[in-house]
Amino acid sequence: MKKLILVRLIYKMIKTKEEINGMRIAGQLAAEVLDMITPFVVPGTSTEELDQRCHDYIVNTQNAIPANVGYKGYEKTVCSSVNQVICHGIPNKNKILKNDDIINIDVTVLKDGWHGDTSKMFTVGKSKPHNERLVRVTQECLYKAIEVVKPGAFLGDIGNAIQTHAESNHYSVVEEYCGHGIGKIYHDEPQILHYGQPGTGLEIKEGMCFTIEPMINLGTKYTKTLSDGWTVETQDGRNSAQWEHTLAVTDAGCEVLTRRKEERF
Image (cartoon, rainbow, N blue to C red; front, top):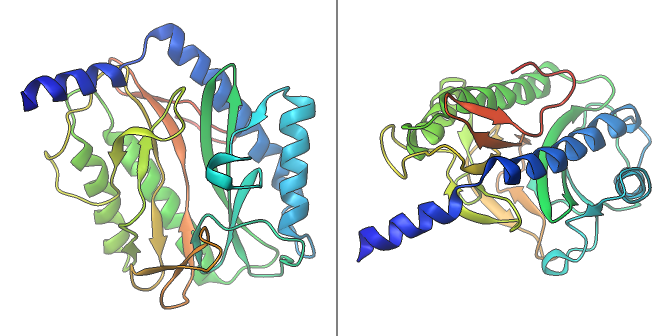
């Protein structure tokens, strides 16, 4: 019975080429939002202003829907996570960016029923080496995870690639939050843990679509959620970084559906 349930679950995760094409369109729109907002991530800008620019671009230029608005009561278009905020930071007119801040902007675009989910780290103004290094190594964790995605690999291979690289650089991996399946459902199965052992977990199949979004901390892995019910911070107050892409598994590897114009895969 358990095996039958697993087979059915895997079958539901597999998308056709036509469905993946719909996701490709949504993914590219999400990537374009991050390209658009990049010049505005500068000292003196509020996270509320960044959010409004992203909202207006999605609605008025892309003729799409900002998927975060109204999702489980969330009111903003993006999550803007600054410095010690790990994820789900809420844009605010009083949160003004300053030199040496680091910020993750996480955006999901809904187009013709399909979701494209991605995030990017930004260093604000003149950054200190330790912040630049955290941002760079976290991106490397994402890229190393993408490299192992192919049919016949396992979800544990993804987590192990991230954990190995992060810990070899003396950082810690947030364990409470993970990547996820995605398609017409925003957060779907399978869960993509950012730590683990190679050869464990679900076997990866062609046609699966999911996000990888490692959250890497400068200090310990422990987290705390603020009273707003959304904002997650490092427990020790040290900085955290995150990068995210949406992938589709191909016959020989994977396609990064949210690839930005400066990236080469």
